[in-house]
Image (cartoon, rainbow, N blue to C red; front, side, top):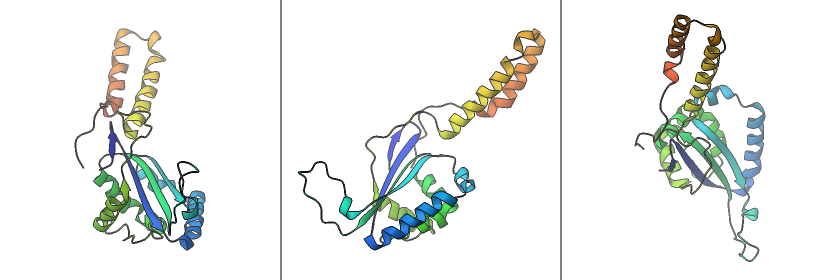
Length: 197
């Protein structure tokens, strides 16, 4: 299980790639960045952040110049992400919605089984995942959907407030009831998530 901060989870996965494959993946990532359709990503609105990074074997970072250089055989593909919900929900959604894109990216990594079926994919991610010690979360007790809901409530409240100085008490009561009816689905609670994996 990845680390938990309020309702957000962080996940890192590091996979080895043979160096000759790196330039192919770099080209694919460049093409994806230029032509990716955001419609599939919008279906996954619980994702706060996702990023891919390639670290070449000859440029592996060292803490200091005194640290000996490592003689690595592989380049490394690192995937970083923050999301709402459980680890299982996240991997299931990725497999169901973005399997083609995941296959195109992770196919170049050693022993990648494919994003479908989901069980071998989950086993692979569990094997290559590393715990996250620290990450930034602007709203630790709110999901992305909580933040979107708050924006909708604020916009509706502004609409209620603008004409209110000129309303009678009865008119305001009617408008207030309409406001509550309109935003009731967005008045959830932030806080700790339910326990689950």
